[in-house]
Image (cartoon, rainbow, N blue to C red; front, side):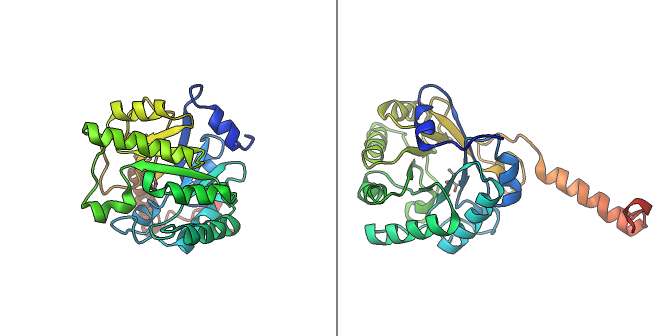
Length: 263
Ligand code: KIV
């Protein structure tokens, strides 16, 4: 069985080992990922893939606590990061109150919050009060309504400079790592080089310190759309549908249950 990684282990991977992060939303899948991934992220993307909402903005704290607890129960030896949902860290006081609630009720190891320079004072307040924080810069899914869509970042000099400032601010505020999402690969590379904590990419090329993917995307369970940056390692939905079709046919033609499945 794998030994649970510490924040120091994860920080030491910078420039030596690529960090493997994957999302999970329940105990069943978390258990399968436990010995394979370095970090399990309970992302608020579950609001889309599992709740069927159109974005992450409507995710709630109690929903995130419920799913994080399930992941914790399924993967006791994994380093688990929980997403703090939109609106739960809008000022220092609210952020600390909600982060403490998340820590105490879910058993997570760290929380993730979206934002760079503009969230630095909140990250600092959390880390100074014993909350381990993973930052999230670049494309911020919780700001998608405010920005009018999912927009790739780092497309010009101004955006590239802002991303480097964001990364530095997140690091200086005490975060132990950060996710960088939807950033041009050459800019993400410079961002990763500009800080001494791991920068874990999603849709941001390969020259960063690790990768994160949403498990239901990379295993082909989420069929709505597949973003360009997602590689499908399994056609999960097709396999599930084939199995359920076989079950349906056997129930209808009376071959299930057969003698071996009858008491
Ligand atoms: O919610 C999520 O799954 C995430 C990843 C996209 C990094 O934040």
